[in-house]
Image 1 (spheres, rainbow, N blue to C red):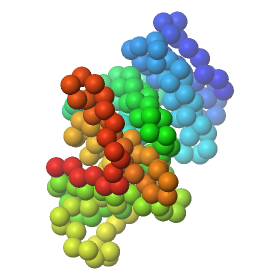
Image 2 (cartoon, helix red, strand yellow):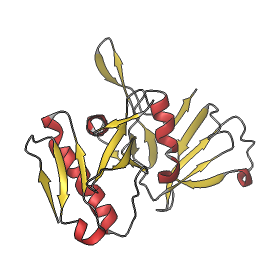
Image 3 (cartoon, rainbow, N blue to C red):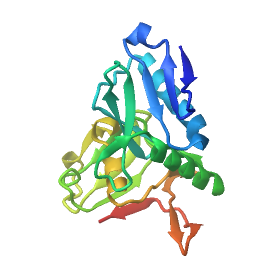
Image 4 (cartoon, helix red, strand yellow):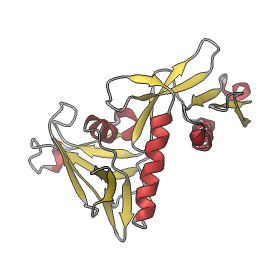
Length: 219
């Protein structure tokens, strides 16, 4: 299998994957400066499915802190779409996904930290009210490898651990849903021995890096 580039240099696709899985994978950007990131994205997805994981049409896949969705083309190729910045609908291409990915890494590099988003196979801990649309708050703890470390709760949480449940990050898109609904992209970092949350904010047209915090609240 190899990754090939379209004639307009805006689409990258797998070549040779169909012999093993029955389909090829492709993704498109609207800016040629994103093509290297696009190639890495397609390679990431290809390696993901070659390990035995399945991706079906209309399923979502988180990349960093944004969500992409798989669409099946008439040709049988799986093409990736993404949420619009206002999170109202999916649109063709993954340009914003890759821009956010780049920005998140820039933030982490600026404060000398490691970009560490949850992966699609890890679990997060949620309380009642998270999926009902309540205001949420979260904290991240060091956890076993099968857990992302994120605990997302609402005011309905009464402190009883038995009331919490673990759900797959890939199945719910919980963190991404909360982030996109507030139009804020928060790159997770690990500073010292604690998991922290760092985020950029535009102030008077200039990007300022605020001191990382171990918690967040979205309302």
